[in-house]
Picture (tube, rainbow, N blue to C red):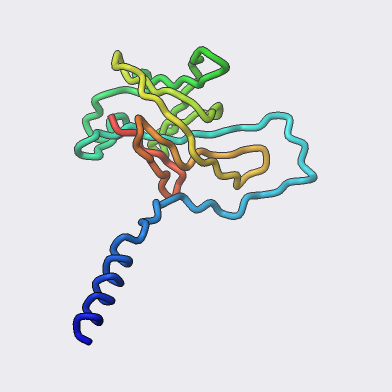
Length: 154
């Protein structure tokens, strides 16, 4: 009887320990539906900061910055070639952003090789706009914070 109980307990523990871990995701607020709004332009935003891989320190807006906003180039893939898009600066919020985000992009900092980006999820909480909240950078999923800011590691 004890052996049967031990076997059942061991199988139960094995089943619980092998349960698939759910990947964390960004939870969008309820997406807006704006049927009365005619969008002349539709913005796809990407808000980001460039941080040190090891320390997490902000490399553009932090104390003793090691790169400038001019060192950061962002490219979107249109058909085949990558096209550079403007990177805007919001010093008050300590972030860089673009209003031309796409599903497939690349980030280039100084003379380093391009880092490829794939937007996995956008959230729409404004009419005629959406913001990237989940981005894969070189195979690593990055999730935006509560301000929809993605921290790219460099």
